[in-house]
Length: 480
Ligand code: NAD
Image 1 (tube, rainbow, N blue to C red):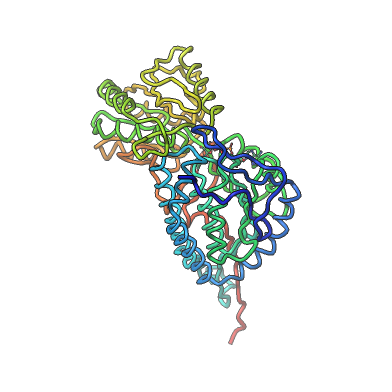
Image 2 (image 1 turned 180 degrees about the horizontal axis):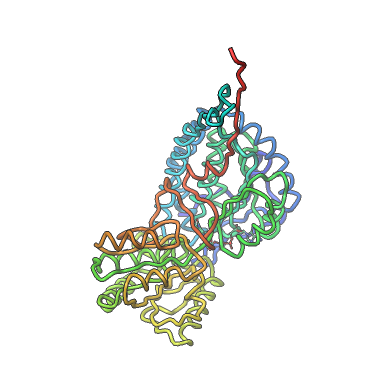
C-alpha cells in the first residue's frame, strides 16, 4: 500500500508553502523517493522568525485550558491517524514498522503529558521577611514563557523528539520554530498538521525544512531567538553552542553508553536486554548500548548468550512485523560504521559476529579485544556494533565506563543492591538503569546527560522549566 504523506509543503507564516528548490526524501531500504520537501532559504528563516514573534504573543496570551485542549486534540489526531504516522516513520527513517509503532505511541504520550503539565506551571510565595528590615514585604514568583524557541531535531526519532520540543513549548506559552532533519522531515510536517487541525494559532508553530548548516545557523544566531533547543550529534552541538552565544540552550547530544554485568546477574536476561539495547533502530539510538563490561567469572557465558541472540536477530525488510532490524539511515552511514569496525579489526579486535555490510544494511556486530586507541572505543558509533570487555570487578568497570567524553545513561545487571547503588553514585551519567540496559526511557522522566552528552534535561516537565523563566513580584506594604 502506498504511504500517505503530506507532500512537499512546509509550515511557514501559518501557511503551507512550496519552494522551487527541493530536498528529496528517500527510503533508506531501497533508495526509492518518498517525497520532496522545500529547501528553505535564509530569507525564509528570517521571515519565520519575524512571524514567530507574533506567534509568541498569541501563545503567551492563550489560557492554560486552551493550551491543554490543543495538546489533547493533537494527541487524539495522532492517535486516530496512527497508521499514517507509523508508515511515514518506517519509510523515511530506518526504524522497523514495530519500532515506528512504538514511537507513535510515545508521541501521543508526550503530547498528553504536555497537556497535563501545562496546569502545573506553578510559582511560589517568597518569605521576604527572612531579611531584617523586610518585614512589611510580601510577594511571589511565577514562570513566564521565554518567547521564541529555535529547535533543531535529528533523524533517528523523527516524530517523538519533535513532540518533546513542541509539546512543552505550547504547554508553556511559547512560539517554536522546528528545523527537522533533512533526512526525515515528513514526520515533523505531519505533526504540525495535527497541531493546526487542533486549532493552534498561526505562527505559534513553524516547521522550516532545509539545510542545517545554512538555515539552522541563521536561526540559532538570530537575536530574536530566545532559546535554542538542539538534539543531535556532539560536533553539531558544539558548533551551534559556539554560534548561538549568550542564549538559553538545551543540548541533547550523543553517547556510547556502557552496561556493566556483575557475576551475580541474571545472565540470560542481561544478554537479552543488551542485544535489544545495542541493535534496536539499527543502533542509531542516543542511549543504545555500545560498551559492555562483564565480570570475568561470567564473561564466557555472557559472550555465548549474546552472540546467540545477535545471530537470531532478524535483519531485513523494515515493513515486516517479523523484522527486528532494518537498514541504517543511508549507505554513507553504513560505510562509516564499516570503516570503524575495519579499523578496530586491523588494530587487533575480534569480530565475534556480524561485521558485514550490504548497501545501507550492517549486520548486528559484536567485537571483543578492542584496543583503546580505536575510534569505536571512545566515540559514538551510532550503528549496530557493541564491544565486550571482561573486567576484574565493579571498580574497574566503573573506571572504564567513565573514561569517555560522554555520559548519558548506563545499565548495570546485579542482584547486589550495594553494588548497584555504588555504581549509581560513581557513574558520570544522567541516568542508571538497574537490571536493564542503558536503552530505557519513559517520556515523563528527566532525560539528558553530563559531559559531552549535553546540557539540560528533556522529559516534558523539565523542558517546560527550561522554556520558562521565574519573574518575581514583590509588594512593599505600607505600615498600617
Ligand atoms: P546531526 O548532529 O547530524 O544533525 C542533527 C540536526 O542538526 C539536523 O536537523 C541537522 O540538519 C542539523 N544541523 C547539522 N549541522 C548544523 C549546523 N551547523 N547548524 C545548525 N543545525 C545543523 O545528528 P543526526 O545524525 O541527525 O542524529 C544523530 C545524533 O543525535 C547522534 O549523535 C545521537 O546520539 C543524537 N541524539 C541525541 C538524543 C538525545 O536525546 N540525547 C536523541 C536522539 C539523537
